[in-house]
Length: 439
Image (cartoon, rainbow, N blue to C red; front, side):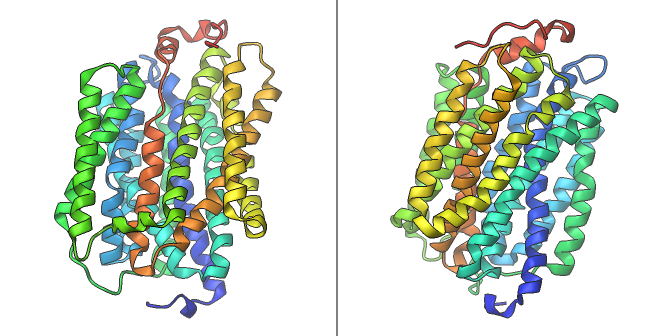
């Protein structure tokens, strides 16, 4: 397949539906574990996981996700993006079943690592297939719909996860993934095209090795520093410094490579560079807020898993509406004006978390969440469209990987307050009478 003009509009809509389902899977899993953290720490009804083990159950997913993105993009460009997406779905489904019936925290952490690898193999191919499938005049609308999957996942994950946690065992939250994986695999096999780069490039093992190890070091340092609150420890900074050195080596290697997996010259395009770094900042704010609220609602406010999940609906609805609204406004006023304004609103809305205490109206918490979701949707959809528009078709996989890598690095950079650990050590019956969050 060499031309997007060969795909009729009816099939384009079916392709987009399958890609949305695949993306929803990633977003569900990025939110659903937060609902289960309290139960996992319970030695009777859960696994008796320590705060450190819970941190790694969350962090290992992101660590593997971030480090495998460049590999996923390069493999998709070489072997076909549908092939790699389906491989990711298979790994994700198998790892979800393992996580659901894990017998101890170590098994859960290993299963989550595999889920991160599977997720990494899904995301860049999804974005690349959109780039190959939709002509420029329809691509913005397609990305807006695909971006709405974030809102759907954020809504479905906590609510359905909370319902399952309240009525079944903790591992049931991972069974949500299994029917979605099955649907995605069948749909991908029947509907998706398998675009690949017209030139069959070699895999560039040096570049892929440097990028994978560099992202591993950087992500590990950010996770350790942010989760443990130990930014002054030498291990954190040595890991971050080693990661940055390896990534610098990756850039130099790719600059000299005649057929690089990723061409660093793309960053000469201001739209590509600014768009990717904007998305990294947005996902930093998003992840920080979601992690804080998980402990604030279930810990400080003593809410049930289902009730805390329902509190995510305003933000999820905001993302869905914002994705559509942002794309339409960007077509009229320009990406820079719309995304720039939305980022400012996001920063102001996120800062409202500093004013929450145990008596704050839940209506107000929901209003702030809706503003956060709306601004995220209005930023990500038009910015992602602008980034993809700068990429040649034969670089869609690698370019999409860069987009996702910077999002993940942004997510890893958020900190964590020691209060989160202390809340896990407080008996559940006492959490409703909680301390006020630090102002």
